[in-house]
Image (cartoon, rainbow, N blue to C red; front, side, top):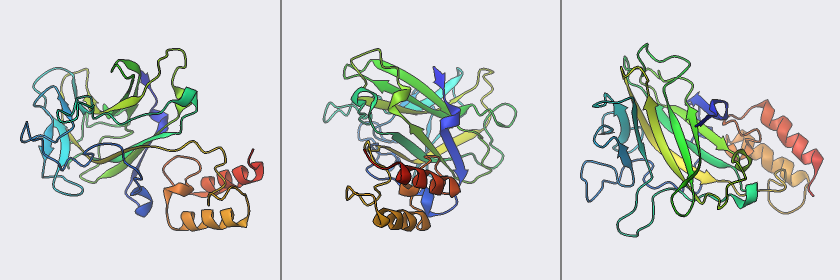
Length: 271
């Protein structure tokens, strides 16, 4: 399992720039739809181990429910994922993924997490090396795992406040030597503790998954095929509006780094 914690950005809620979720391909990412076969569980999510995750009304960020991990019945791992079949369609709930020979667009996985006051996760009250995070398992059409990656959140003590996280995953991170390539990705929020103490609780809500179309000319912000003042104006409008479409550094935050990255892309021109 590969850890890429540096690619995950978690920031406290700071305005509308953190609320963007275009073209969400994740089913029931806000956990509002109840499973018709297993009442008391959110549809489209497999619980690991069965019965331990909590479909909660107490800490919902939006709507009525969130999904939490707390005090398991045993073992050292807890989670819930999308790797199961929709009994009505026969299709898996895993979001689709396009590898495109390593040229596929960035995969964005985002959402919010919360630990209640006095319930920081971990035997020592969590800390910088959080035992919680998101696991992504890229899968082929035959459901076999092409490659898996684990992203730990930087801190599992939010003191009762929802915090935003975002994973930006580039296609060239995948090893290119094992065709057939992945066509979907299982999303697995988890908590892990080798000590088995499992103190604290963590809740997740408003999860989002989408893949950004590969753009050979990112500075063409207005999409007219020409780099000119119109693109500069469009970028400025997005930046001032707090729209993450202006996040040219893909770090989940709009700042001077994005301005510099846009200028560099604009001066580089388009092929």
